[in-house]
Length: 162
Image 1 (cartoon, rainbow, N blue to C red):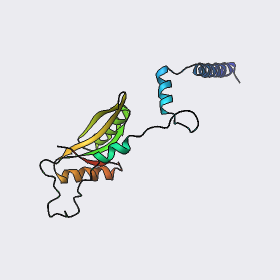
Image 2 (image 1 turned 90 degrees about the vertical axis):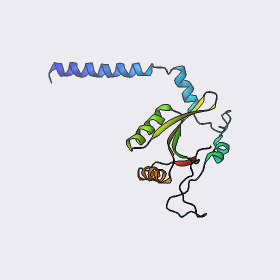
Image 3 (image 1 turned 120 degrees about the vertical axis):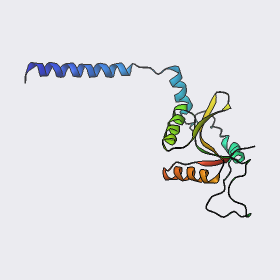
Image 4 (image 1 turned 180 degrees about the horizontal axis):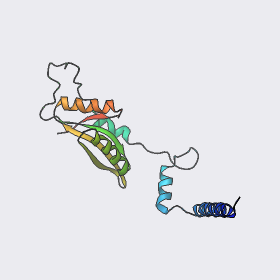
């Protein structure tokens, strides 16, 4: 084999080894270490307390099942919400604003009116809710629910408080 092939192979191998050595010396920043510690699950017996979940107490007050458009109403009234009742559809709640924006972009491409609501449950603990609506009529609500179901996106319907 020619000498230049051996030279080229040696240089590429040396650069690759130098790159691996460089990667071995990289230390994570303090912020990255905090994120790693925050996302690490608490194992039994490691001295950390188990996580506290507040959604068990928060969600029952906020979740409302909207009347379905296909079923006849039981009281004889139409399933159209009254002028005071408005509904929204929540398609996700994310800690990361980037993830929420990604979901928002998906839904915008489906032709839905989407907004992100930032909610701070505890100081320093922000959640980003991706919501569609508000809907004044049950037909537009059902159309949005159908679009989400066709694209296999989980969602919940919430009634806005007056």
